Length: 146
Ligand SMILES: [Zn+2]
View 1 (cartoon, rainbow, N blue to C red):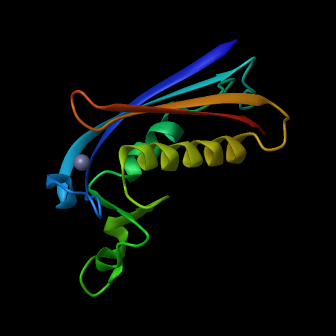
View 2: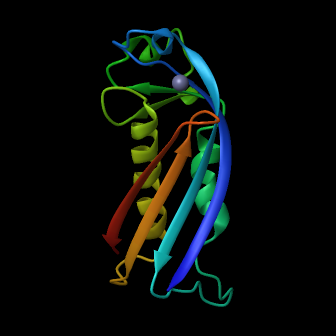
């Protein structure tokens, strides 16, 4: 079994719609994320003899840096007259909660694997841990065959 682990962090803002408390207002975090990807044996990129570029996974976190994370129903931030569309990233689900940020990161990790090693029939176990604050973590995992 082989395991790849990649760490990253990003500064991003969000707000929780319909939340009764201060999280309903726009605020930011220094989010930290870790990907742990496992496979019996990773395919290797020819010549480089490397499996998965750490940069490709960390790029997922990097993309979220200095962005406003929103839910699709948060129309205010989708108004291109008010906010630069490049500065806004739509998370899955009803709110940009840590759960949905993790789901977003998992989806992107699957895309990275599909892009690098399409159709090899390899089973990957992808885990992402997203840390919203010093004490709050969310871990999501997914098994995919690509
Ligand atoms: Zn928050």
